[in-house]
Structures are given as C-alpha cells and as structure tokens.
Image (cartoon, rainbow, N blue to C red; front, side, top):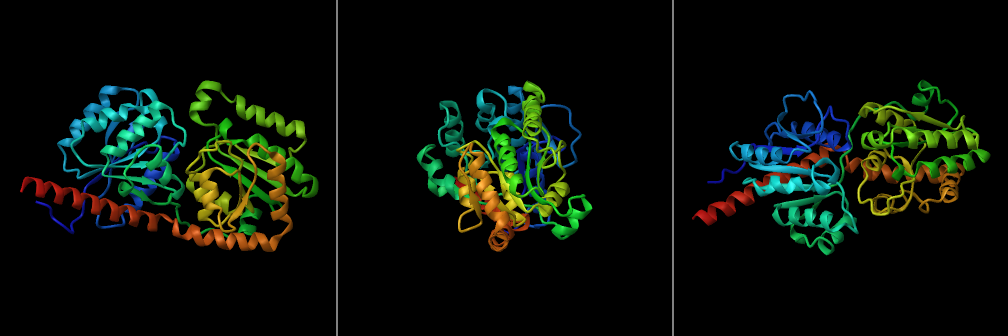
Length: 393
C-alpha cells in the first residue's frame, strides 16, 4: 500500500566524480542539493565507470561501462533494494555498446520505475540513436529535457508521449563572488576586456573561429583577452592526443595574437569556473553543432548574468531570446567579430543584456531546479504506487 508524505528512496544512474565529465558534475550538484530537501532520503548513485575511481559513500554500486553483464547484474541487485525510483542521466557516450545500447539491457531487467533525463536530443539521429531514446521514452515514467526547443523533437522524431515530457532547466551552482573588476585585478587582467569560453576542448567547439574573431576584434580593441578555459576532452585526447589544441595554438601564433588569447589547460573546479565567468565581460560559444539542444557551459554563463555571443544552435537561440545576447553565423569568424565589437562599443546595451540574462539565470540556480526534480520524483513514485495498488485491488 502506498504511504504518502514520507521521504523517498531515489538512486541515480550516471557518471560521478572523481570521473571528469560534465554529467558527473551535474549529478553531484543535483544530489547535493536534494540532500537539503527533506522529502528525499540521501540520494544514492550507481556510477558508470571506465576506470578505477575512489568514490564517496553516496555510490552504492558501479557499472563497468564496457561490460554488458555489469548492466544486468546492477539491475537485478537494484530490484532487491528499497529503491523506489531510478533516475537515468542519459548521454550516448557514457554507456557501452553501439551508441550506448547496453542501457537497454539495464532497463529490460529493472523492475523499479525510472525517469530518464536526456542530456542530448538529436534532430537527425541514426537508426540506433533513435531506437535507444524511443525505448527509453516508452518505458520511462517521465522524460526530463532541459530546453523547450526539444519537446517537438521528442514527440515528432522519437514518438514520445507528450504527457510524459517535463522541461526542467539545467542547474547552476550559486556562489557569492567578488565584483568583476576586483577579480580581474586579482588574476592580473586589470584594464582588459575579457571574453571567455570554457569546457572540455574538442573540434566541435569551433574555437578556431573564436580565435580568428578575436584577431579581428583586437585591431580595434587591443585590450581584449580571450580565455580558452579547460583541458582537451579525454576521448579526443585518447584518440588524437593534443593535435587540436596544438592546431589552435599554431593559429594564435600565425595570427600574431599571443597577447590576446590565453589557454588555461586544466580541468576546472566549479569555483574556478564561476570566478572566470564572473570576471568575463562576454561569454562566447562558437560551437559548430547545429543540433545542440542543451549546453551546460552556456547554462552556467546565463546563471551568472553574462552577455553571450553564440552561434545559433537551438539551446543558444532559446537562452538568448528577448535580448539576452547576440547570435552569429556558424563557422563565421567575421560574424562573431561583428557581435563582439558591437557589445564592446555599446556599454549601455551590454549592461541591459546582463540584467535580462541574470533575471533568467536566477531561476536556474540549483536550489530551484532541485525543488522541481524533488516534486517530480515524489509525484512519479506516488502515481506509480497508486496505480500498482489499483491493479492489485
């Protein structure tokens, strides 16, 4: 029999720190915030591992990414626990098999209701990519997406029942930070106009166009400094080494903008990301992917009220609507440069954009987002259990 209004037992299937992965950070942020909400017992994690990691005590089980049997074993073990809801954080690249289809073995053997949170929604998926999301959508109690632009795609392309879809923004950590100019001084950037991009570096980020744009902007604004923050994506590094980063560094030298572009080659802590964002005048995402439905890095920039210049992928169009930034053309450094110059030369426009972006960003702080997830989890558990009681009756 269902018991209402008591703390619930929820587990997340996801990557988790110390694995260096955006999804791992997302899950850690969410479960930490859920700890503060007494309606959920300490949320637990089943960690997807691709190496030996020393996890904290929140991790109750590991699934070995490339070991198919590990998925079956985890599902069967989970069925014997007191867990009432499983939350699958889905990204194709974190699960083993063909486009991560080992996740289907997990859900086929799971007898506990589950919710799927989609971190990637493709407009033109391959047959296998489409099949995975279609099956997850059919078997999930709910499907969470982080942007309104994906709802039509999920119903039209993947055939997911619209009543199952919930839109919850990507969360952003809240931290009190020093004023921009004070931080600039501390980092040795006094008098500079700071433009930044952060995240794991890979060819799809379009950073070469960002660098070319800076070379153009520096002709009129020699004080500009472009910070490329983050290390090379581990998967890219494993396959290609540092060839993409070296290509970018070569471009900086060739264009003669060594004084205007700086690489910070490390995996940034959340505190470092927030400080770099806070000292930035403009945040730039020159991404090449035309289908990108969500971007965690862009969400952070919105959260901290940055003026954003971006290529027009779906998430950027949604986040930058109503005058919260400027959109440039894909793979077009001149278009990026025009946007950057306009903002630098119109401080009153920049100030207005910052206010508009911050208004949206405040709604995306993890406290608000975690409350939305908690309500969804409890509602889903109660509805599922009530349905089960009715069937038994």
